[in-house]
Image 1 (cartoon, rainbow, N blue to C red):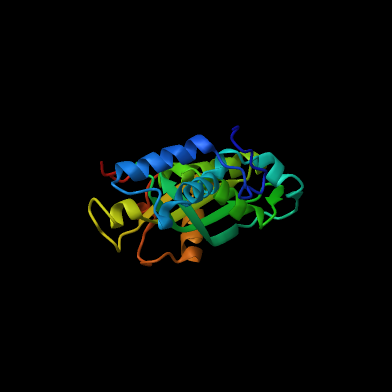
Image 2 (cartoon, rainbow, N blue to C red; image 1 turned 90 degrees about the vertical axis):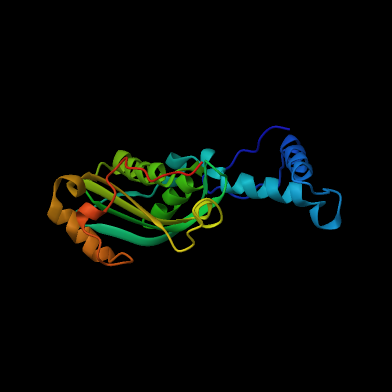
Length: 220
């Protein structure tokens, strides 16, 4: 059966991949379970559906999603969309990580419809990801599509691969940032953005934020 194709809005498809369901059934057996018992009979289908949704960002068409949502305006002050919820999957352990994303940019003749920024976040979150890469991808696509004077993205994430296993630190969270253009080059612009955010903890300085490309330890 051919893999389903998602639209720009990434709906949950009702078409499932039978080989995928066979793999999930085999996984249940390897874990010592009986895939024919009542609670697990439909689990392969459910997991298939969930994984297709959680990785639907691979098939999403960003240009189609943004079509008609880029506007020419005479506005050159900072635009911030904050507290965007995201849910993603760690590519190392296939466990969820989730949190909030804050996006800012300074227009240079064009703006993005406000509802489209959370959808951009969703497209890159719904993949097997690293938080660092996701943060950079969100910043880079906004920079590419509207060529603003600057883009800033900060993501705060809780990683279940750290909370449930490995170091088992349930209260830890990871902050990543990507700063482009004026946000990278001008400390006053960066500080204005961070002050407006008032991140959890409140005492993070500009130098305390991760630099683009910096990675935290990923446990084996």
